[in-house]
Length: 206
Image (cartoon, rainbow, N blue to C red; front, side):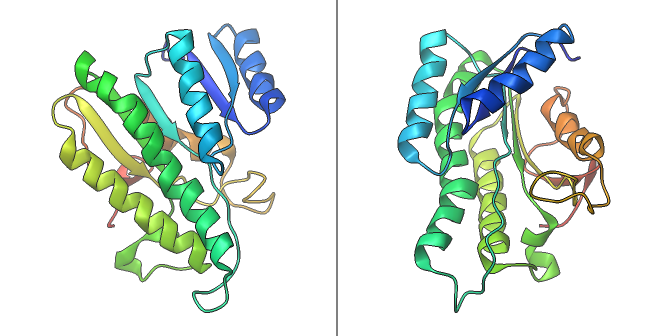
Protein backbone atom coordinates (compact mmCIF):
# COMPACT_ATOMS: atom_id res chain seq x y z
CA UNK A 1 0.00 0.00 0.00
CA UNK A 2 3.04 2.27 0.36
CA UNK A 3 4.18 1.52 -3.19
CA UNK A 4 7.12 -0.64 -2.14
CA UNK A 5 8.19 -3.86 -3.82
CA UNK A 6 8.17 -6.53 -1.12
CA UNK A 7 10.76 -9.30 -0.85
CA UNK A 8 9.44 -12.00 1.50
CA UNK A 9 12.20 -14.06 3.10
CA UNK A 10 11.31 -17.44 4.55
CA UNK A 11 13.26 -20.56 5.50
CA UNK A 12 10.77 -22.47 3.37
CA UNK A 13 10.77 -21.00 -0.14
CA UNK A 14 7.19 -22.12 -0.79
CA UNK A 15 5.92 -20.25 2.29
CA UNK A 16 7.59 -17.01 1.24
CA UNK A 17 6.31 -17.34 -2.30
CA UNK A 18 2.79 -18.06 -1.04
CA UNK A 19 2.77 -14.78 0.89
CA UNK A 20 4.25 -12.96 -2.10
CA UNK A 21 1.57 -14.50 -4.30
CA UNK A 22 -1.20 -13.13 -2.10
CA UNK A 23 0.39 -9.70 -2.28
CA UNK A 24 0.61 -9.90 -6.08
CA UNK A 25 -3.03 -10.96 -6.26
CA UNK A 26 -3.86 -7.82 -4.29
CA UNK A 27 -2.03 -5.76 -6.91
CA UNK A 28 1.34 -5.30 -5.19
CA UNK A 29 4.86 -6.11 -6.37
CA UNK A 30 6.28 -9.01 -4.37
CA UNK A 31 8.41 -12.10 -4.56
CA UNK A 32 9.68 -14.71 -2.13
CA UNK A 33 13.25 -15.79 -1.46
CA UNK A 34 14.59 -18.59 0.69
CA UNK A 35 16.52 -17.61 3.80
CA UNK A 36 17.07 -19.61 6.98
CA UNK A 37 18.44 -17.08 9.45
CA UNK A 38 19.66 -19.86 11.75
CA UNK A 39 22.22 -20.80 9.08
CA UNK A 40 24.85 -18.18 8.17
CA UNK A 41 25.40 -19.80 4.77
CA UNK A 42 21.70 -19.38 3.96
CA UNK A 43 21.82 -15.71 4.95
CA UNK A 44 24.85 -15.23 2.69
CA UNK A 45 23.08 -17.01 -0.18
CA UNK A 46 19.99 -14.83 0.22
CA UNK A 47 22.11 -11.69 0.17
CA UNK A 48 23.78 -12.93 -3.02
CA UNK A 49 20.33 -13.58 -4.53
CA UNK A 50 19.35 -9.98 -3.83
CA UNK A 51 22.54 -8.78 -5.49
CA UNK A 52 21.88 -10.95 -8.55
CA UNK A 53 18.37 -9.54 -8.80
CA UNK A 54 19.83 -6.06 -8.72
CA UNK A 55 17.60 -5.32 -5.77
CA UNK A 56 18.36 -2.22 -3.73
CA UNK A 57 16.85 -2.61 -0.27
CA UNK A 58 15.33 0.66 0.93
CA UNK A 59 13.55 -0.88 3.92
CA UNK A 60 14.91 -3.83 5.90
CA UNK A 61 12.64 -5.56 8.41
CA UNK A 62 14.32 -8.15 10.64
CA UNK A 63 11.37 -10.19 11.85
CA UNK A 64 12.57 -13.78 12.34
CA UNK A 65 12.15 -15.13 15.84
CA UNK A 66 12.21 -18.21 18.04
CA UNK A 67 11.18 -18.74 21.65
CA UNK A 68 13.30 -21.51 23.19
CA UNK A 69 12.53 -22.17 26.84
CA UNK A 70 15.17 -22.30 29.53
CA UNK A 71 17.20 -20.40 32.07
CA UNK A 72 20.80 -19.22 32.10
CA UNK A 73 21.69 -22.28 34.17
CA UNK A 74 19.98 -24.98 32.14
CA UNK A 75 19.72 -23.84 28.51
CA UNK A 76 22.03 -25.92 26.27
CA UNK A 77 24.72 -23.76 24.72
CA UNK A 78 23.74 -24.78 21.19
CA UNK A 79 20.16 -23.63 21.87
CA UNK A 80 21.43 -20.33 23.23
CA UNK A 81 23.73 -20.01 20.23
CA UNK A 82 20.84 -20.56 17.82
CA UNK A 83 18.85 -17.82 19.57
CA UNK A 84 21.75 -15.39 19.17
CA UNK A 85 22.18 -16.42 15.53
CA UNK A 86 18.52 -15.77 14.73
CA UNK A 87 17.91 -12.66 16.84
CA UNK A 88 21.28 -10.90 16.64
CA UNK A 89 23.90 -12.19 14.21
CA UNK A 90 21.61 -12.66 11.20
CA UNK A 91 20.04 -9.20 11.58
CA UNK A 92 23.56 -7.81 11.84
CA UNK A 93 24.61 -9.64 8.67
CA UNK A 94 21.61 -8.27 6.80
CA UNK A 95 22.24 -4.77 8.13
CA UNK A 96 25.85 -4.97 6.97
CA UNK A 97 24.68 -6.15 3.55
CA UNK A 98 21.93 -3.57 3.04
CA UNK A 99 22.77 -0.38 4.93
CA UNK A 100 25.84 0.71 2.92
CA UNK A 101 23.63 1.06 -0.18
CA UNK A 102 21.08 2.97 1.90
CA UNK A 103 23.80 5.38 2.97
CA UNK A 104 24.95 5.81 -0.63
CA UNK A 105 21.36 6.51 -1.73
CA UNK A 106 20.70 8.88 1.16
CA UNK A 107 17.63 6.95 2.30
CA UNK A 108 16.92 3.84 4.33
CA UNK A 109 14.80 2.34 7.05
CA UNK A 110 15.76 -0.58 9.31
CA UNK A 111 13.17 -2.12 11.61
CA UNK A 112 14.28 -4.72 14.13
CA UNK A 113 11.28 -6.57 15.54
CA UNK A 114 12.07 -6.92 19.22
CA UNK A 115 10.04 -7.55 22.37
CA UNK A 116 9.15 -5.98 25.67
CA UNK A 117 10.66 -9.08 27.25
CA UNK A 118 14.03 -7.66 26.20
CA UNK A 119 13.55 -4.39 28.09
CA UNK A 120 16.45 -3.91 30.50
CA UNK A 121 14.45 -1.20 32.28
CA UNK A 122 11.77 -3.76 33.10
CA UNK A 123 14.20 -6.38 34.36
CA UNK A 124 13.85 -8.60 31.27
CA UNK A 125 11.32 -11.42 31.44
CA UNK A 126 10.39 -14.76 30.00
CA UNK A 127 12.85 -17.43 28.93
CA UNK A 128 16.53 -16.50 29.13
CA UNK A 129 17.44 -17.30 25.49
CA UNK A 130 14.63 -15.05 24.28
CA UNK A 131 14.93 -12.09 26.63
CA UNK A 132 18.74 -11.97 26.51
CA UNK A 133 18.90 -12.02 22.72
CA UNK A 134 16.12 -9.48 22.30
CA UNK A 135 18.05 -7.18 24.64
CA UNK A 136 21.09 -7.74 22.42
CA UNK A 137 18.99 -6.93 19.34
CA UNK A 138 18.02 -3.66 21.00
CA UNK A 139 21.70 -2.91 21.57
CA UNK A 140 22.40 -3.67 17.90
CA UNK A 141 19.61 -1.26 16.95
CA UNK A 142 21.00 1.60 19.01
CA UNK A 143 24.59 1.03 17.91
CA UNK A 144 23.59 0.89 14.23
CA UNK A 145 21.57 4.09 14.60
CA UNK A 146 24.58 5.79 16.21
CA UNK A 147 26.71 4.78 13.22
CA UNK A 148 24.26 5.83 10.48
CA UNK A 149 23.45 9.51 10.35
CA UNK A 150 21.32 11.39 7.86
CA UNK A 151 18.11 9.99 6.44
CA UNK A 152 18.73 6.44 7.68
CA UNK A 153 16.25 5.53 10.40
CA UNK A 154 17.08 2.49 12.54
CA UNK A 155 14.57 1.51 15.20
CA UNK A 156 13.38 -1.44 17.25
CA UNK A 157 9.69 -2.23 17.51
CA UNK A 158 7.76 -4.29 20.03
CA UNK A 159 4.63 -5.56 18.24
CA UNK A 160 3.21 -7.00 21.45
CA UNK A 161 1.96 -10.53 21.98
CA UNK A 162 0.54 -11.38 18.56
CA UNK A 163 -1.56 -14.25 17.17
CA UNK A 164 1.21 -15.85 15.11
CA UNK A 165 2.41 -19.43 15.02
CA UNK A 166 4.83 -18.54 17.81
CA UNK A 167 2.42 -16.34 19.77
CA UNK A 168 -0.52 -18.73 19.52
CA UNK A 169 -4.22 -18.16 19.00
CA UNK A 170 -4.65 -17.00 22.60
CA UNK A 171 -2.50 -13.90 22.11
CA UNK A 172 -4.40 -10.64 22.67
CA UNK A 173 -3.26 -8.85 19.51
CA UNK A 174 -4.15 -9.61 15.91
CA UNK A 175 -1.53 -9.87 13.19
CA UNK A 176 -2.76 -6.56 11.75
CA UNK A 177 -2.35 -4.86 15.12
CA UNK A 178 1.16 -6.22 15.51
CA UNK A 179 2.13 -5.30 11.97
CA UNK A 180 0.93 -1.72 12.34
CA UNK A 181 3.88 -0.77 14.56
CA UNK A 182 6.33 -2.35 12.14
CA UNK A 183 4.84 -0.56 9.14
CA UNK A 184 4.88 2.73 11.04
CA UNK A 185 8.64 2.40 11.57
CA UNK A 186 9.23 1.16 8.01
CA UNK A 187 7.80 4.28 6.37
CA UNK A 188 8.93 7.01 8.77
CA UNK A 189 9.17 10.47 7.21
CA UNK A 190 12.53 12.16 6.72
CA UNK A 191 12.20 13.94 10.07
CA UNK A 192 11.21 10.73 11.87
CA UNK A 193 13.07 9.31 14.87
CA UNK A 194 16.01 6.94 14.86
CA UNK A 195 17.71 4.89 17.55
CA UNK A 196 14.55 4.26 19.55
CA UNK A 197 12.35 1.45 20.84
CA UNK A 198 8.65 1.76 19.98
CA UNK A 199 5.29 0.14 20.56
CA UNK A 200 2.24 1.41 18.66
CA UNK A 201 4.26 4.40 17.47
CA UNK A 202 5.09 5.47 21.03
CA UNK A 203 8.61 5.34 22.44
CA UNK A 204 9.23 2.89 25.27
CA UNK A 205 12.25 2.44 27.52
CA UNK A 206 15.10 0.13 26.59
